[in-house]
Every structure is written in C-alpha cells, then in structure tokens.
Length: 176
Image 1 (cartoon, rainbow, N blue to C red):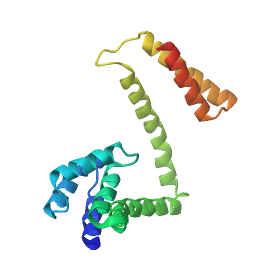
Image 2 (tube, helix red, strand yellow):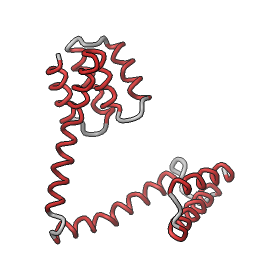
Image 3 (cartoon, one colour):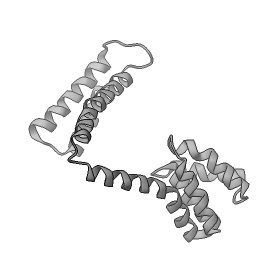
Image 4 (cartoon, rainbow, N blue to C red):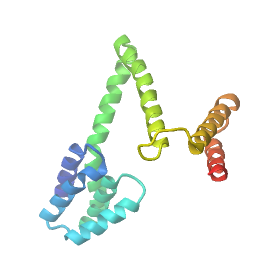
C-alpha cells in the first residue's frame, strides 16, 4: 500500500504543472481507479484540502495518504508529491550556484529584473481597473496615493514591512 501511494503521488508530482488545481483530476482518476476512495469521499477530501493552508495538491495527497494508510501513508504520499519539485529546485540551485560568476548567467538574471518589474506593474495596473473600463477615478487615485506613501515610508524610514501593511490596510479602510 505504501509503495503504491508513493509511486502514484511521485507520478502526480512529476506532471503537476499549472498548479494544484490542475492535478486534482489526475489524483481523482488514480484514487478512484485504485478504489481507495469513493467519489464523494474524494470530493470531501479536496474540499478539506482547499480550506487548509498550503498547496491543495499537497494537502490532498496528505489527506488521501492518511485516509488510506494512516499516519505513515500521509508521510509517504506527501513525500511522493513534493519530491520531484524538491529535486528540480535543488538541481537548479546547484546549477546557478556553480554558474553564479558566469557573465552570461549574470547578464540573463539582470535582464530578467526589468521584465519581472514590468510584469508586476502591468498586473497592478490591470487589476486596478474594474472590468474592462480604463480611466482615472477616485479609487485609482487613492490606491496610488497609498502605494506612494508606503513606498516612501519603506525607503525613507526603513520601517518594517508588516507595519507598512498595517498602515496600508488602515488607510484602505478609511479611504474606501
């Protein structure tokens, strides 16, 4: 049973591109095919995993492992689903650590900074406009004001980010 859980979840971990919700159908197919759970039990498991903190795929694997093989099953299923990601991350980290002084790698990573910044700014602008209507209104002005004040406080006074979040939250409550 443990080996079956491990193999199933390591395969799911290998193909889990697109986030946790993308692999739920794969997990459901495997779990119901193995007759480890009924569709209703699986649905309840995914619902519980969804409201728990963390990745829904990892939480689902842990709960399925626990329900089918107890505490050890939960550990086996969790290790199975996260092991492929850990191997990839450790491998890439080792590669970049060895190549950190390579001028091509440095240039590539420095080149990604403005792209990443641009994408974040685009997302902020895109989500600041409700619907498809783009224009300047009170909400946008207030949001930009709060953002500007927070940036000023971070850079000028080097305040703790948690304090900045609290100030921004309080400002949002007052202004909106």
